[in-house]
Length: 536
Length: 64
Image (cartoon, rainbow over all chains, first blue to last red):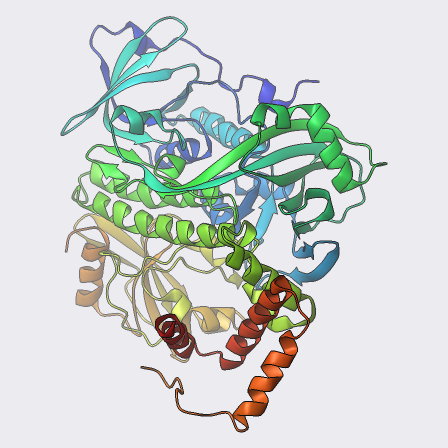
């Protein structure tokens, strides 16, 4: 049987752009049909921006690759119309176990907070994620949206100009050129676009190799995340076991730096390692094996005029904490509405500089967290190993040491503190919903707050008066009127009011808070809308 | 500076020091290093104040 990642999902077909004498000008061209490129394309197409996605391949991701999807990206995918298949197919887990040498030193339960529609995390092979995105593209095409994926369209040159970009493309039927008002490069950590433009990508290389194996087995391991420090079957290194759908188990084994990658990848070398880990009598089949090394680095700027970088092409992190695909989706979530406003002439181009500010901030946070996890998992000096082992030894019997154990800090969205789009906080409210914060979900009867907020500017009022709609210089803001009484669980109050009796929030299309105060004031909120759209 | 106490604060200082040495007695270098690391972590948790801990790290770094 063919695996999904062996079947072309967007086979090459000739575009009439290839027959044009002059290069056709497209409003938006996206390079790369991975999760981030497709996410950006769907976001823009839903806003009626015509979009062309170019990919040098014609299939979804080979192997499981990014396997953990966090709540915030799932919420973003809800707005892109593919959150539900992700959650339906994905594996939910809450319990993690940590082993050191031969002992289980402790286990934890994520104990997700109540009142959120989406779980804290799901595990899902990247190829399923990409399949759902491609399905969504087809749905949008059926609705008449202008979105297309061009398979086997390999970009060979990019030219950046003041008001457009030029793109040279190789296809099985020869080359052709395109122009784009806006070019979004989502072509991965090795980004050819970045290299063709001669842009920097500096950071820290971690001298280590990890073997990843997708193993199919009927095993009775529970649906939990198991992490080993220095296990007997991989002495001096680490190991991770994670469950994915279809009885596929993801195994990551640290191998160290000085290895022969081609040798280590051979089944005759992989299988004994896995048997030592899983037990001699466990039957399994290898679906995919890969070896990866990683770096933590980012571009200095994510926007270069009309060329914008998103996802791994702009920033790369270690895999611990699942911050790659998860943060890339937050990039496109941040970019989509801003680009739409700029293209429609409703906001100045300078609004896109806030994409740079906010997502560089997010990338730095992710790089910091994943570097710290890496330093804990793979100590780089004798003393860091001594301290690491001391934490693990203490964690077995003492609760206090457990927060110091760092086998990956699970991806949470970044708060855009200090963003030029924020209006100074004017509510003595909860810290977690201060300006710049992503809105936390709340269950409201049979519905959820984030679904009600949608993807447009919203004035959220809680026990406060305000007009049903205000329009400021082309930006329409619709009111969502709630009362703390709407939610008997008290979560709305706890997350949005704190000790205040009322609140008015200006919420951006990407569901981040732009401004808040205790009551509506027309002048102040008009100024906040201008500020949130790059006009102040 | 935080409230890091750099004045004498351990009653029976000689007894404490003897206890510290006794804890290391008979240990290999590796075992002693591990013991010191655990002790630092236990004490740091007891202090629990990040400003004091940062100052303590700075004091320890400059004294050597």
